Image 1 (cartoon, rainbow, N blue to C red):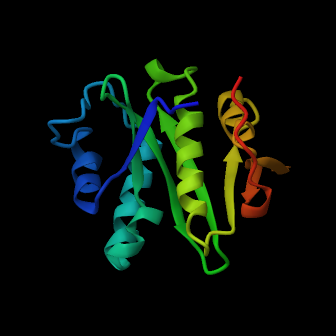
Image 2 (image 1 turned 45 degrees about the vertical axis):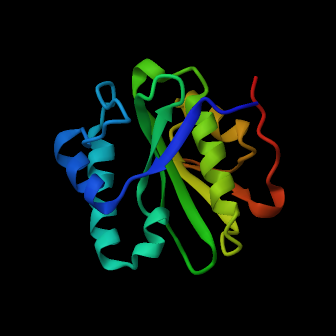
Image 3 (image 1 turned 90 degrees about the horizontal axis):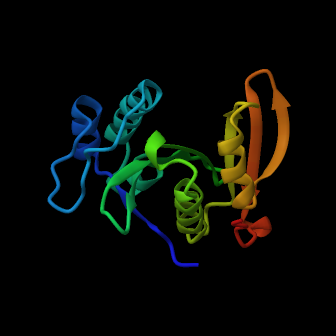
Length: 172
């Protein structure tokens, strides 16, 4: 299956613009449909602070990656990690503008980012924490990509995917 999505990591400078304006100057990418939620805006601010404190070579583990439609070059959403710890574990998060939901764009973006992460030998485990029980779309994204449910708490459902359990994604 060829991907309908292109992922592009945002630089620190692009995040700083995005947190204020919703738009990064680009001749190649149409930002007109991208909606940044208050939760994402808060996460961007945290990412900016962390990225200012680390070496540039690790920025890809902290930044958001822009989900871009291969067909239309429209920015559709964001996907990214919250860094990677010394044990090789990273937490994934994602969001897509409502108009692009239910087209498996997020599933494909997660697949691409997971495969990018596991190309680095030090990445051993990817987790997704706090998935709300009524967020069936997010649960499907993770399950399509081979993540396994590991626990349910008051904060939500936690999933994980280890390098050795990486499966071929299931798209229906």
